[in-house]
Length: 291
Image 1 (spheres, rainbow, N blue to C red):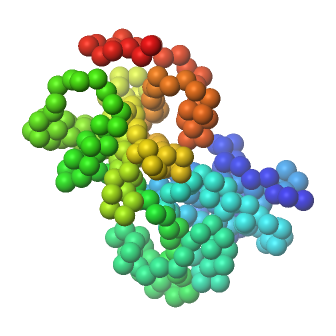
Image 2: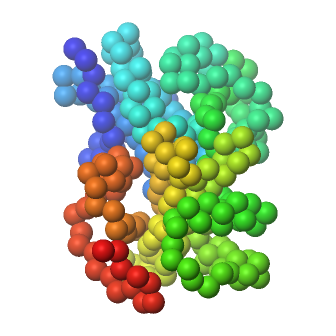
């Protein structure tokens, strides 16, 4: 029987907790944890956690019940994570005996110096009691990270590909001020970098909110990938990181709008987890409407 693997829902948490207790681990869940479960004969026999430790993805745990091992459960869980990540980079700490398993999703053993500082520190702590642990990374040609002020001019050049009508040209001071306002309000300008060159960008604005117990919401704007790098998963990677960043900011939702209503565009946004089950209305001030 082939395992049925899916993203976990809240109703699965007791079963995951029991599974982890059998493993001798505690089950903890934060908003930025995405769990996957695998079922055989309607019983959850395996689970894995993909966490977003801003700004990187980390596979934190993977466990399969002893009686279900050798039936493709672990492989199925990693395949689901692989599909979720698209072309995004990810890290994991695993036993050296598990290297072959994680290599199935493109991970390679790495030296600690290539990992973020918090992960290097975690790695060293674990190795004190588990010397057979190693660090692996899912490599990608594209790195998605916040655009720093030194990169902002690459982002501005990329936005020129929108071919907007002639409007006021922003001065250097204008750009710096707007960038500062985005960041100071909790937002971020994300960039997709390939070989040091910015090939895609989007902006996540964090908006204060009086409903939903005061939890903010996110608005995504200016998502663009340079023409030669489109249809390679770069845009989906940007949206994936934007969504997990919004979760880390305690947003209760993120939203975006587009004037393009093609089936390909609809498929793209849905593949990144967005739905079209809401109606959007807008008034555009001093901006031409698309015909």
